[in-house]
Image: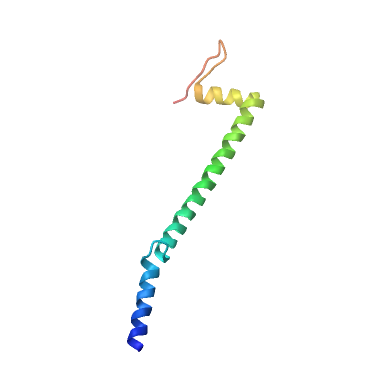
Length: 85
């Protein structure tokens, strides 16, 4: 009788681990979920930075000038740039 219960218990445990919605599948799904949460947080932060940048570009003339000079090398007419490299 004990051998029958033990073998039945082993079969049930193996079934719970191997079946499609088993414990192994649950942990893989949980790992994917946590990875997606981290990615979502990173994208939320990036979106916040883009919205802030957008507001600055719409309303802050000094920021627009700074970006134009640093990233696009714009200068005023008759302005001379001296590089110390």
